[in-house]
Length: 164
Image (tube, rainbow, N blue to C red; front, side):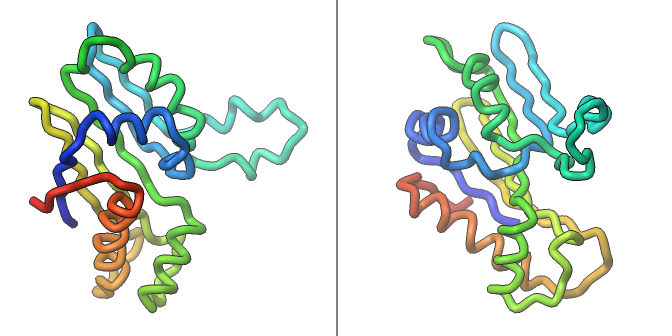
C-alpha cells in the first residue's frame, strides 16, 4: 500500500471527470459532499437485468467508471469546490491478470482485488492503493507490482504526484 498526494488538483479532476482515463476501472463506491451528501454503491443489482433476454451472468459485479462518471461530474461541477469526496476504484480482472503475469505471480486474478482510494478533504487530494486477497497467501509480488504500476500510470498521464 502506498499513498500519493496529487500536486495539481484541478488537472487531476479534469482527467478524472472529463476524459476516459479511468473509464475501465470498476467503482465500488462514491461519496460526494457538496450542498448535500451523495453516496453511490457501485455494486450492480443483477435482478435489474433479469427481464432482458441477454444472459445475466454476463453482468459484472461493479459499475464501470465510464457509466458513473457523467453522474459524478454533474454532482461536482460548478463554481464551488466539494467539501469532500471519496472514490473507491478496482482494476478489472483482465488488467489484474496482466499485472499478475508481469509480476510472475501464480495467483488467480479472480482471487485478487487491486484498488485505489481517491480522497479529497481539506483541499488535499490523496490516492492510496490497496490489495485484497480472497485466499491466504504470502505472495506479495502482485501487491508490489500494483504499488509500482498505479503511480507510473498517473505520471504517464501527466498527473504530478508526491509520495507520502
